[in-house]
Image (cartoon, rainbow, N blue to C red):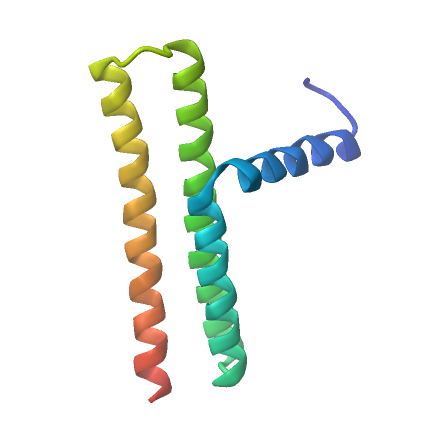
Length: 116
């Protein structure tokens, strides 16, 4: 996989996004929230700095969800039976998504507060 041309690496990444989109309901839900956030930014004519902060917060949430999904898929593949350590690992990855989501929600709340 190393030293592949950029277009091949990009196609792998896009395939990963497509797979996650098909498999992960939470990724689709977070994407819907992102669309609502974009609409709020546009309707409230937010300054460019707010666009940057909100987009960064949304990207962090989506990236955390992608890492969580990949880790869960790998853990389930390598150890399909229930195991306390696998469960703990999956819980910690889900915790990372929760932390990033709370951070993004705080960013959204601060934006709405500043817009009023």
